[in-house]
Length: 118
Image (cartoon, rainbow, N blue to C red; front, side):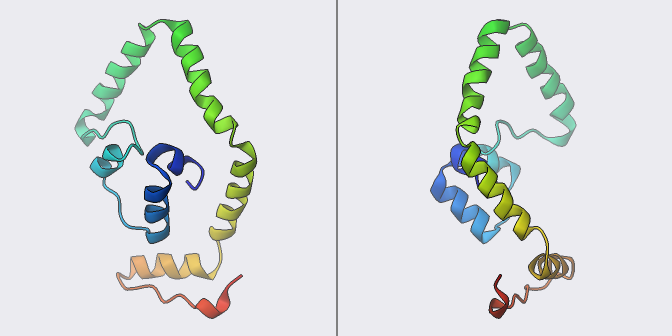
């Protein structure tokens, strides 16, 4: 998320959302550019098929090379991506994750201990 989100919705919005952990609706994710489309649950399959058919009927080489060019943005971030991934994995375990999940499950404010930084 720390690599992709700034490219998708801008650094300021990415920092705000990732650091505050505020909930994000599908509509808001679409509005800020984090996702391409927000579709009602019952329309997902039909909309996906419409888009797939449209792409399948499009000019294959133009689509292929455009996709390749756009994906280059991600490949250009490879060094930062490796570091970001390492930092994210550090945050996926440990006491803070357990407390965050427990507080969410128990519908209470988390009690993080700032004296236990690592």
